[in-house]
Length: 391
Image 1 (tube, rainbow, N blue to C red):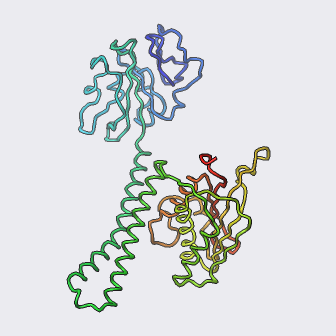
Image 2 (cartoon, rainbow, N blue to C red):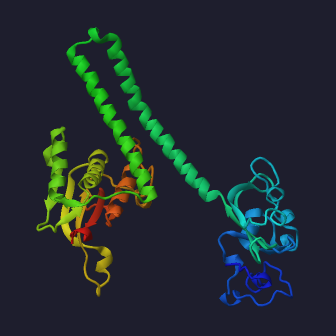
Image 3 (cartoon, rainbow, N blue to C red):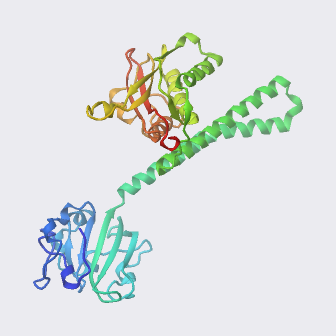
């Protein structure tokens, strides 16, 4: 709901804020009256005071946030109906002085303030004047609960704690082995030195991966994940990952790669496609059992398939499945959230969150379900075709 700046005609009428405001008989006709807007429908708290500083609107959200019934607030002085203090315990209305302060000021930016009892609330204020530097005709205050922001802060704190815990182990190992080698180099055989240096190298790679995950999380959350599209042979990319697992000791017959030809030309970021494949195949190998099956096939976008009148959108579909116990039904809607680790501990729990962000940055989709063999089945699609900037 908007508040105008045209003197008496800018007033909030009772019919616009039904049940939570008081009107004056000389307020005229409000141009907003025909909109049928009810302040109680607003998700944020709304408090409005008139030119005398008395509350004429106190909506349901304001009553919920402040725990003050609307009928107790209406008609009272603003500073009495809404007693606010800053984080240093100073009375906010005395500090800001909306009616007697600087005539060029038109409001207060959102900030954290305290309600009686110490409850935090986000408050912003707008001073409505009839003309620049004129007297204040209305003070419009918005109130927001801090719970959503606190959830975000808790998520960030959990991310920091998780990554700090994961970094501590490899860094402790690196520090221990390097300190030992520096202090007692001559006492170790070449084989012992080689083993310790290989451990240091592996732990350094682990730290590098964790830092890369942090950067990916930051870019995904801020919408700045860059995709550098190039031609990608999906079948060959999957084959390289299988060969790497076989070379590291996994039996070759544990993997089944099925490619449906011909595959359409796929333009994607090869490094990020490798990141997606690495995560999904590693999950199947580490947490699954039996044969790990990877199917690569041409398909059409599920969203386009439902629209029979629109043109079909070609995609490349990749499905990774195993024959283990699978993911419990009640957990499937949390698989792509931060810190989800399933029934087994280990890792940061960020891998599948990053995978989803990468796939969606390409304009694709990813789903999880139960494989025919009973294990977990992850399926992602990437749109194909030459990027517009190359046409």
